[in-house]
Length: 113
Length: 110
Image 1 (cartoon, each protein chain N blue to C red):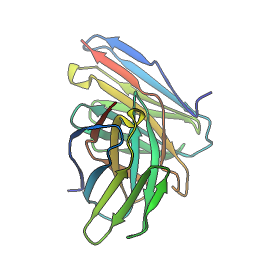
Image 2: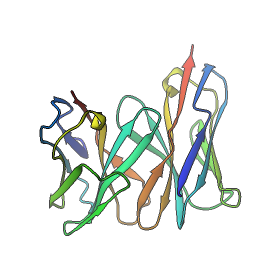
Image 3: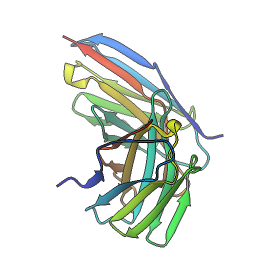
């Protein structure tokens, strides 16, 4: 099994729909992150969580919400999807000391039509 | 404003060539600089650099950081087609957040 698992792998949804992207990790790390990747813009931080009771906004949190259901689970929701949220979404986790960078999931390709 | 800038945006070379990828950064409370390789989907970790002037090496890949000039380079020698990917540079700041550059797309042809 992958260290960081994201579901679904691909999703097409309509404008205005609510959608949830799920992430689970088996690394045992407290720190988890959601990024989106757009062509030419790199990866940008949406939300991050340093433990189950800690949720923080990143640089582009508008239109998104998150839930940290357990140490291993961190989900991202789009309350009312819009076309400019079409992107590749990555979940990641990092070790407490930060010696090994982030471990990323395989990504969710979301298309909002 | 914190930012990480990578150059060139893309690079096309032939197998056996040596390439140098560049990364400059302006990051408040800088802690370290990381390099990732992204092939199909998930970025995979290559190096983390915290100290100036100390080269990190892994096979044909090497990287070094210059904290005075706020700059890092990633070198790949004797390139192979399997090196074709997007290479991402990221600055770590404050607690544990990363700010990424837009990446350099490397294409290696036989």
